[in-house]
Every structure is written in C-alpha cells, then in structure tokens.
Length: 291
Image 1 (tube, helix red, strand yellow):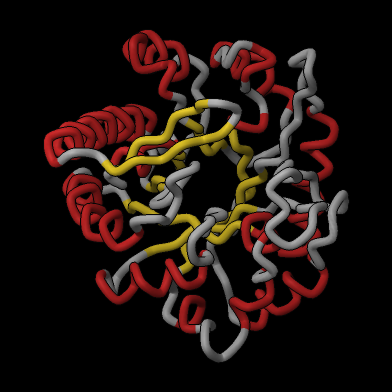
Image 2 (cartoon, helix red, strand yellow; image 1 turned 30 degrees about the horizontal axis):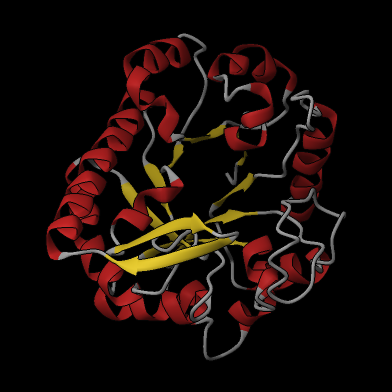
C-alpha cells in the first residue's frame, strides 16, 4: 500500500529553534502515515539525546533525509561571503582529503540515526548549495563509499533531483546512472518544476527511470516561481504554485508507480507556529490522486 509521509523539515526549522521535541505534540495532529526525518548538522553534538527523545515518541520513521550539506564536503571546493558576494575556490589536496573524511564521518552519524529509528531508506543530496554540481563527476565517484556504507547497514540510499547551477537534475541523474546501474532516485516535483523538467520524466528519453524502477520515492511539493528563479525557492503546498498535479499523477499512474510520497511544504512562519491543517490538506490531496 502506498504511504504518505510528512517531512519533519516542514515542521522544524530556524523560526522554532529546530526543536525536535516539537515532534511529540505535532505528530498527534498530523494525518500522515509516518515521517521522513530531516537531519540538521546543528544536532550532531547531541545525537544521543536526540535519538533517545525521538524514539520515545514511538513514531513510524521509514525514511531519513541526510544532512543536505554533506555533498558540499565531497565537492572539493570552498565557498565564503566577501564584499557582498559569494566567492569560490578549489581546496588544496590536503583540505580536500580532510573534507572528504568529514563527509564520511558525518554520513555515519546519519546512518546511525536511520538504524536507531528503524528506517530503511535515506534521501541524499549528491549536489547542493553554492558549489552544487560544479564537480558532479567527483561527487558521483565519491558516492560509491556512501552507497556501500548504506548497503552494509541494509539501507537504500536514494539520490534526489535537487536544483543545481551548472547542469540540470536530469543530466546529473543520468550521469550517476552511468556509474551505478542500480541507482535509486527520489523525484521531487518542486525541484523538477524549478528547471522546467516536471513532465520530462515521462518522455521516451527519460522514462527508463520509471520503467526500470529507479524512482523509489516521491517528494510532492508545489513551486510558484519561474524557470531557475533563484529568488523564489519556497516549498509550497499542493495547489499554491503552478505544478500540474492532475497531469503529473495521471501520467504516473500509467507507469504503475508503487512507491511512497513525502510532503515537504514549509508549514511554519516567522513565528515558528506550524500550520498542521495545511499539511493535512496536502496528505488528503495526494491520497485522492493515488486511490
């Protein structure tokens, strides 16, 4: 049976102090089938406490979303802010070696969280942030170590089609597939729409991803900006942007997709208060599409 999950990133963010303890009360107000747990690097110093606390809520957490910036540590570059501009420079071989080691160490922490929560899937940003896919070939090669670590722990590591600034998500996904023929993907409708690629997944050149069962999970979010509109990256609820979900779900059904879905629509405002009613509407809308 297809399940509809809620991303904890939709509930917990900077405005409410990234307080994972909020899950205890918020989970009781949400009509989802479980959660995709978003990991923040600010939690690393208190992982033991986090695990103990969240496990105490007895939640169904089948999916972990790895810390987003892990891939930036694979990329071999440094970014900093200077004179009102972001600057980029390549790392020295020694800096790169240390950065790669840090990525592996932190990924191991994300894996531990997954195992403790009983998750069997992990979402991974293979490119991310300002460095993004500048060195996608290097990131893709280094992905092998992470993939092996996940497999040794019985967890499926899935690459997401996140926005990028050198190529485009479909290009990157095909590049990764050439290296790993058994690669698994998370397909995010908002990320795809940002690049004008939402329906491209159903075109003959690309529908191998569905036909060969590489797409194992879907993030169902709306987008209201224009093509590669970097100033308009908000994750919107279904119906608040211009993704054609009627058409998307109609085509998806033709391919017999049997995976699960996660809603990531940002549900908190500047005051940190979470709009659970909006999220429940999203869950209901998806269930109407997949029934």
